[in-house]
Image 1 (cartoon, rainbow over the protein chains, first blue to last red):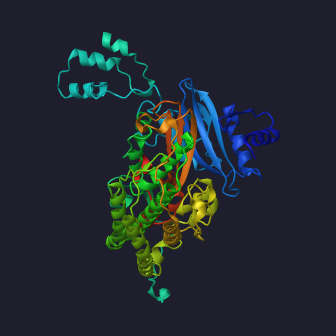
Image 2 (cartoon, chains in turn blue, yellow):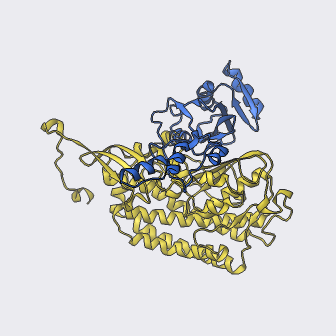
Image 3 (cartoon, chains in turn orange, brown):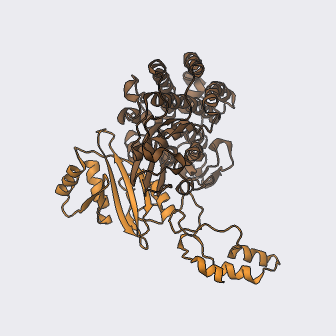
Length: 192
Length: 390
């Protein structure tokens, strides 16, 4: 079955689902349709895509994309790549954990690295970074912290232990924002 | 005889006796030899029985994916060695295959054969070590492991001869391999392959019927086939549950379609099956190696007509697009997802790590068993933290 045939096959059985071919894969235009599509593909007698191999995210600057690779353990010839696109500010994607348990850790990783909010995930916590970490390190606008610069916690700790910290370090720490949320323009720092 | 040996224990049921039992939370790891690295399990115990288990990982996290997105494609090759540091050759193969798919590079036959030989040798190394460590977890402290390591050492000598490094091989290149195999090295491999069955027979005589191994492994940590498929489990763990899925057969990548070999399957999906499937897989790997060593012919080991984008590896710019390459690594499906924007660095680089995803079912397998069984079950999953944490 070619990609076009798969597309028509899905659209025939699931009216109202809009799909768009993007580079050898199908884009599910409305992310909310994703569980329906995946459930259909899993149960479908011809495709039987019952093995979710990989779940991951990609940052395309203007939007975030979630990519799913589906294979079949029964019918070994078919595979399909699905993707959904969501807004960077509000990246809500329905979770696939109720359908595939294999998505559990991978969705947690995508949340950890990109900040996807997987609605319906039973235990959406950070998995590789530590609890309490702020920001999403795989986003393209993430700025790595400068080891030369003291951050707020360092200064607090030093002051608590009776070490005086120079005014410029405090100023720099205030201008410093952590993680992927930082939109710190370079020029501002040099001016300050 | 077995029945006679069993000590009759009196089971105290707290419900009947009216005794209050309390649950206890225990952290196993991250600094504990039984967790195979810096991995932690938060286990809630009722007496000795596991009530819930939460895997905690990330202690070895270095954001491998972000590092790879900031360096060139060929510079990622040595980094892939550090993912699953037991099997650098198959990691290299997965990465090379993905990029070759992206840039549409044809690989000469000899290079494909060398890759197959190397990845099957890697499988031998991995499986003997896993079985050795599994016995470690059961309390046979380091004797079986060192027994296995003696064989592993011979293979590592070959790796050192061909690539210059025992574990961090960095041997494959886009379009082929780094160096050709000499006749001496081929002879060395042939000798290993010829000697290996004797070692396997010996290992099996010691273990397969061993009472302690049987009692600790059989009917412990059972993983039903439906759950295994649903939880995206791959590799020997999936096949131990009786699901016939091996990417070497399914995708027939490289030159695997030219060899005759079988896929060993388990019946129950317990720890014993996982151990025994690995044992049988090694015998199939030896079959593949024998055929590959017979069929390999002299020829170029690098693609003679490389595309323009590959002429200078440091300035390698694949065309815009994306690729998902996967291989049957010894631990399961190792996949690389790469998106290229036409520049020197990949726009997106993702590793689908088999042992990371295989951990999904750890809790499901451990609940109801004793704490000591949880250690054995974890050992049978075969994790390497370099790959789990990336």
